[in-house]
Image 1 (cartoon, one colour):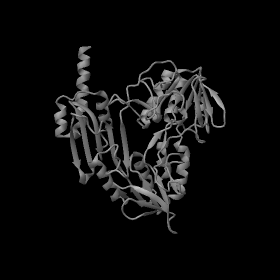
Image 2: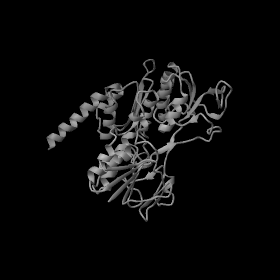
Image 3: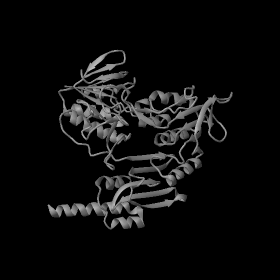
Image 4: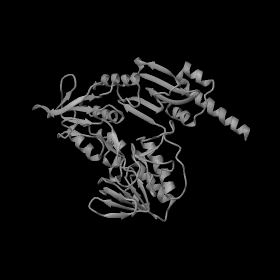
Length: 424
């Protein structure tokens, strides 16, 4: 049996390791389209602030880790086409490779908005190690940097740029920062926090063009209102999309990504998908979504490997969860953080302390939450959402004081454990 994994991010690496464990007699081949060893994109911000070197981004630190585990890693191995009938891949350069089971773990790539000037020298995404090298060469202390996009990825990059002591301007077209994980109140607090740290933030603002600058700064960012912003470097972080183009004509069903069932199987026999390219079960909604976060990628990789090796395992669904550190202010969102039809919620808002907590209920079940400036409840909130435990009278106690979430968790889970032991 030959297992081939396309993509060497967290999903691909976890899958390769579990395939070797579950199916020790088979061949396991891990293909990366980049020249570097498998690495974590989430580690790039730490590289930008010199907390780690490039080797610190590598997913596995031992130089012989993959070889000693019987995993063949091929770098610069870009897959151009998949031929499911022949069970073959075509690589850039024309080489063909056979497979018996194929895992698509190709991840995503940054979106480039249709704005004039996106191809100018000094305009970059921040997605690869090569991107990081280019940013480091320009983002010196005092450099004028414009960051387009204040979503989750944008805010991760924001912190690195601010810590590099650049003169940073952030432009976000939505009315708040991190609009896909925070409501107006929390997103507004994050903006005020960033401004207090010396970052200029424009919300409800669009970039119309990136023009040539004057003699002092090579670039000039034109906004839909206000003066142009001079820049030595422009970074684009407006979102990502799954890498699926090489699947055209294969019969693999696509939507936001590769549609997979609860075994991470695609619509084509022998082909599985995991990570940011996989559109899998959403625990909260029962629908199928792409959850581009590392914990989901790792879960996908493990479960896909189990099923590829013939050890049937179902995926319970991923919980939409994000935790973000923005210049020391921790924000988090979980599940259906925006609420549900017919549900209700409770809110704690302490703007002077940059604290915010909002819990979303459906009947007496916690289905979502968002928090700012509060870190001790992260695991508890996720646990309550994933367990779907009924809160009973604790719901009203939480509506009086949502910070009692830890007490509610302990009380309800212990009560369930006690009842289960009595019944047994």
